[in-house]
Amino acid sequence: MNFFFAAVQRDLRVAFRHRNEIINPLAFFLMVAVLFPLGVNPEAKFLTQVAPGVIWVAALLASLLSVDGIFRTDYEDGSLEQMLISPQSLGVLVLAKVLTHWLISGFLLALLSPLLAMMLFLPSSGLFALVVSLLLGTPTLSLIGAIGAALTVGLRKGGVLISLLVLPLYIPVLIFGAGTVQAGAMGMPITGYLALLAAVLLVSTMVAPFAIVAALKISVRG
Amino acid sequence: MQHNFMLDVKNLYCERDERVLFENLSFSIGKGEVLQIEGQNGSGKTTLLRILSGLSDAFTGQLYWQQQHIDEVLEDFFQSLLYIGHLAGVKAALTAEENLAWMMKLAPHLNKLSLAQALEKVGLFGFEDVPCYTLSAGQQRRVGLARLYLSSAPLWILDEPFTALDKQGVTEKEALIAQHVHNGGMVILTTHHNLAIPNKTVRSINLDTGEVG
Image (cartoon, rainbow over all chains, first blue to last red; front, side, top):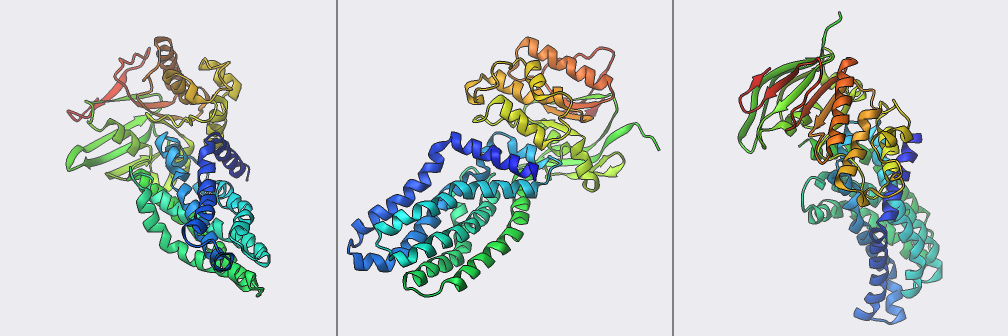
């Protein structure tokens, strides 16, 4: 546990010293909400209908934007080698890295999302559903994204490949996430959707670390 | 049974891009020995060190740690191993102190000295609070090599440890290596520097000729 928190602390420190890497995805998220009405249709009636989908797609892409960096710098400066030959558990370390990624991407996106909801005229009844669905759904995105990042970390240009690998696996989260907000906005119960998102998160928390560890070993040991 | 040899390498074969780097390579290293890997650039020195450290699967052959197949005693092996590659594992955004604190968390065998003592030893006292990207290449290297002062692991595998160090730094690290082997430790390293260790013969493996000395 001590080691887990030390790893989270280290990664948060590194992240806060590269502040633009935290701000970039958030700015992207915000820009979608600003530009979408201008490019498509600024009418409130239209935006109310599409808001759940647009916000969730924007959050998903914003999370994907930063996922490539989870292991990149550690690979480039040799830290990852040291992690692989450490007697400490690599699974714990990987979970700490995913948690850190979520804290600086998904968590902040969820905090920012009410602002987007207002800009896109999402009914206030859907606000709770939006924040909770993002809080439950984005950790899964970080977990799945980390598998892609681990597989492509040894490649010089892994960015495009990550999207191809990871996006198909993101789709269930997107469907359930946007569905939650849609249902919430219409005043329908959302517990069923939330249970599904939670179930997906639980399964990926159990499975993804093994996949990430295996992928890292393949990437480094060649 | 007490056996002198700690790490045994048998019939190692490795090729890269359809070029054979080494084949039928067998050697052992025991307590108090220094083994220097020699060869031209691109002859596979780094590859060999990575294989020995468990960081590469691109080979055939067997590795034994204390008479047991290395895959079976991997955790024990990692407890006993200090590997410093030519990427030193120093995070540029973190300070020297934060880097060392993390290394000590990651590798519990880095426990011989306190963090402050190690920083003083590598001459970075007074620089511990600045991010490593503001340090010179040699100073960054020193942060990575501070592990030599800290490590109680018996096996050191060092890839070009003297790169970017000044003369005094090289002498200090050489003395450390000498002290380590005199205390029964083992060192496998590559360097283009003429390594001199008092009262010890430095064994060598030449990857160009395949000679094991």
